[in-house]
Image (tube, one colour):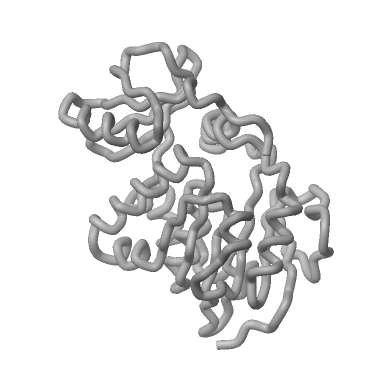
Amino acid sequence: MSEPLSANAIGVTWLQDAYAPAAESLARQLGLPCDQADSTTCSLWLQVGEQGLSLQASGPDAPGAVRVDFVEGAMAHRRQFGGGAGQMVAKAVGLRGAIRPSVLDATAGLGRDAFVLAALGCQVTLIERQPVIAALLDDGLQRARAAGGEVAEIAARMQLIHADAIEAMGAWQGQIPQVVHLDPMFPHREKSALVKKEMRLFRPLAGDDLDAPALLAAALQLASHRVAVKRPRKAPAIEGALPSAQLNGQSSRYDIYGKKKLEA
């Protein structure tokens, strides 16, 4: 992993005075400074407000804030109109017919792929090692569970672990996941403003996953049936074992490492 943003460049703030105590509590939990929103001492701010937790860069040219929202917006649209089990991530982890494997998403990020799989009926465990991103994801999951209805049912199938994925998989104590899903950080080239905004915020935090070969090796050791790795469409496979199959999309692909046939 490349060198992340230094801890003192990240702070916690509040958007309304009523959320100052929650911001102070979160700052203590993460070991980060807490200050008023008009402070210019940090490059990135975790903002606590009535809509939950968001991440905002400071400075005049900063992109808009990013938050995890499973209830409305893009994820709600994808849940309703995204293509169901025909989506590439669903095919990559082996969904077909009545087959709904248990999935470990070892590079959870904002949890979008995990949410899609949970929406399709999979039990999904998420691992995120970057504490600020994990806090955003945890906040999004809590709001989804509180929303009730279908979204709460989906979020109930998602369990978040804040840990280093390589270490966690190597010392795994729970039920063995049938499939491990990996999406190591890589330089996105998509043109959408949303992707650009997220990458501008997250790359200084998380860097690139330079330990991807070790991540793949740990995933292959743990998964009982397969490992699915998301890659840029023209990028080489991760160093190590060779994939047994590939699934190609317009801008990305999945390298599939099969171990055992999935059955209902």
